[in-house]
Length: 235
Length: 401
Image 1 (cartoon, rainbow over the protein chains, first blue to last red):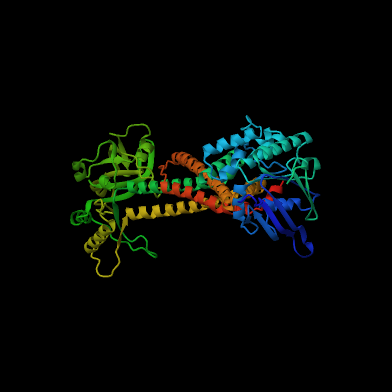
Image 2 (image 1 turned 90 degrees about the vertical axis):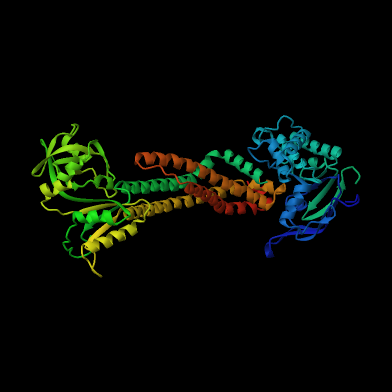
């Protein structure tokens, strides 16, 4: 990947659900470039297409039309398994509902992506512990999600997303289930990770104070991007 | 990856221990039922065979008249002592031939009387019938030659006439004659046909002829074939010789019959084997039901764990990896159920065999087959739920509450 190739580039991307009269255009002719190291917030009311866009970026869904270049490679026509491998190796997810495996220790949750990567056991333990330490959960390795607070659970989820050193971290309403203070703590963690470790973060939110943590905010309305706005920092 | 799938499956089973145990129950009962049925069935077969063999090893019985013919049975003339002697002398594959004759009678001692059968026996009788004297002594050759009024009692007769008392030396009445008890035969128990073999009194054949029957007929010839020789060839030899001696020529039917105990043993064993197979088949149906139970629970489990499957798919699990996870779980459930079933079956059939006085005959082939079958049940009935899990849409799976 040469330095001027964007991490993510969408060209004329559209996504249509349903058929005939029930047809819904979730995304319409979207163009977007996101470079490595950016911290992008995607905002918009519900139904505006931001979640659909996120799913396509995360290779969980495929576009109906248009092109999606990930690190310069066209990925919009990949098969289900190829997309799974792409997610496995390049993408980390953080969800609104944390989505940790219940009754499974924090350490085992963080190890999960490494298991699918066939990382040897010893290295897996070491990396999972390091990732938990990086999100400030040292000493909680053996707590199950039920024994952790919401904020701590989301930290485990972030550790799980980061343990594989992904090219991009996709966060879908990461603070949606947290109170303001915990939410801000999570945002500070993401900001730190972005600033100090250069991790690319793309985040969906509908709260502007959360979006304010990002360096760039993209507004979605009716399946299109309205305008791009810099939060102070130059592109 | 298989190993991690296995540890995942074990973790999942531990996590839902009660449910896992209940899921396994169907397989446990199925496997246990099949193995127990087969083990008890095999024990029964072995017992029946042993009982028939206890009548005498390689025993053939010749008796006058055809038994299994419809219509009026013509009165066939009985054998003679010379027939038995000729059979023993002229057929090399016969090691012993014993002539005997029997008649129902009432035995009386003091106030006790007992209806039984009195048998006239020669010197070979006990050997050929595989019988031994338990206490007292056998007939002496002098007594046999002279037809002395002495007798051996079967265990049942001894019990009925003497109770706890020692019969040896006492005299009992058999019809019109009195004879002295010189010994008691070792107990043989029931025959495979349910007859009490110990309900018998033996006296020397010559004495039987003179004192009880009043003729010199031989109504049974017991023949012992050489071990390792096919009894059907011996049977043919006996048939030929007897036809010759009884002047039955050309295509005329035999007027005697020969019973081959080996053949009867085979028939009886065959019958119990069929019963065993039948019971096993019925029990095997419960294995299928157990498999359906596993499928049911696995389908519930897939629905219940939709979110987990979504998470796994989102972080990069391949379809086949998710499928493998659920398949391994089903197979582990069913094979652990199989192992528990095997242990249960071994315990149950051991106790059952004791209670029914059968030999405990565990067939390792059946144990292995039952185990493999239970694992196969897991694969067959786990496949559909596993495929369902693998084909979930990750986005919808993640949204699932």
